[in-house]
Length: 293
Image (cartoon, rainbow, N blue to C red; front, side, top):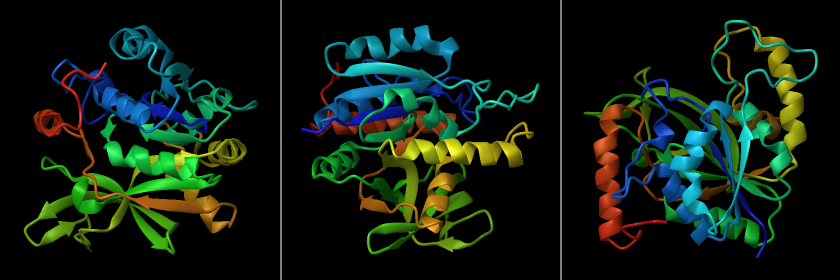
């Protein structure tokens, strides 16, 4: 078995939801969505997990989340800090927002020597997603990959969502177009500009497979980003933009692994009871035990 690491991006505070939603219990024993992701990763053959968090949440995170994984999987931490910038750059005085997912992954560069899978800490991706990407790397693949979901399986009943709509060609990613305000309406799925979208359109939910080859790209791209947008208080260096550029410049291919699984997450507070119900249903159907760890 090859070494594969799960990288969980959990430094964001969750602006729409309010509070540290990654630590919110959704399972019968107060399990978090992160717990289900780690459980699925262990089942799929991952042997290390790196959590990217903010340093001030370390003790809370360990006591509520990671202490229970002891003897199950190797656990490491990396810290995303808005002051952690390349030489010659300073964080704007009034900036509070983290620098985005590209910077988050870069924060964990020293923890990674093997293929790794980067996911959001507050998204439920499902067992099949972890198996798909594990099989990809266990088969000897050395490239980049993305698990894509069908748009209809990623919506919220309580408001519009942003999704990366993907253009595919011969099983590889060609484009990601960030699309906002996506809702299920009476006439179908539409975006904020009232553009009708295909129900089975492939979307990125920030479920990426990378190798350490990514890090030099991230370092160079982050400097370009800081030069152009680093003065802004809310600008973000986002991994889909990095991937888009690598594809456009013919530097990397990204293999798309498609799943029919239903993604779910707590985008809005009103989503939480639905997430709890969906997890109960998965427990009843035998996918998960009543108590994970």
